[in-house]
Image (cartoon, rainbow, N blue to C red; front, side, top):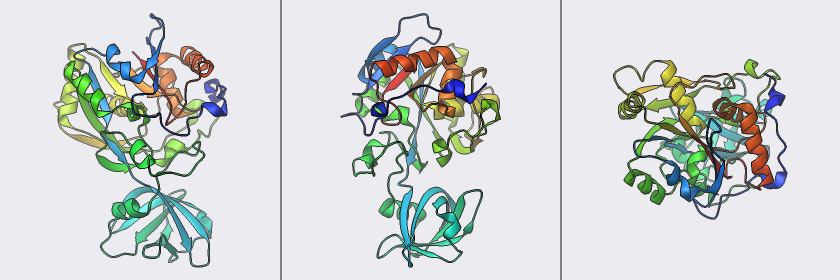
Length: 346
């Protein structure tokens, strides 16, 4: 399949530059996966009307860290570091600009009182850094001096409100450099409503890496590869999914991160085995032609043209129907990407 087949026209003004006025106020497009029912255009606070008692709704409880560090070398060189992962002993790996101008031992100031040292190169674009303040943990350093890593299509600097709004209300475990954006629409009231109606709400963790910002490199879709991302899933979540599968109840993935994780564990046979806590990494690339094993319904935002995320949605709902929905959403003025509106395909 050619990557160009996942292209569509999107006016710049439909790229959401900030969140809706409040969680749940975004728009929601609802489509039958098989196209058997008319598409519904509503708002996210009506989502419970499309859920059923017994559904298993799976959320990604990862927490976005303020991963973007802006530093300066003593000679005035400005350096930007995007945290990727901790590397032990007060060290961490990050994508760096400009990596080629740094030398091992360079000290980079984050403020008058905080600094990091460039240790050397890691894999690909990575640099390895160490925290110079004794006893300060990497995540504490990020929390004190980091910026919210807004995607590059949000053409503004991060603001104080982004620390809350570019985070799901159920975020628990820090480690992501991008939000699982389908979950941004939920508020606490919505979660209570779906629980009260008998929906089984479960969680897992997939820490979203910086590869989510990177374009696909190859014109032939199948030749592309995704960066591996770490995940964990509890025994209780696995047991709920296994029971739903055996009882023919729906498993609903909130976001492409959840969909990829669930399909990964299904491919490894973990749903069919006795439920125990599981963890690992996934580089699963889902594109048209893929046969879903566990995900019955998908809640997701609208994604970039020619992206791996759009490829997954096209695999789930069909390429032509999905792109037709996108064209309709553009015509109706839906807001796109991370802070934009949502679609529910079931």
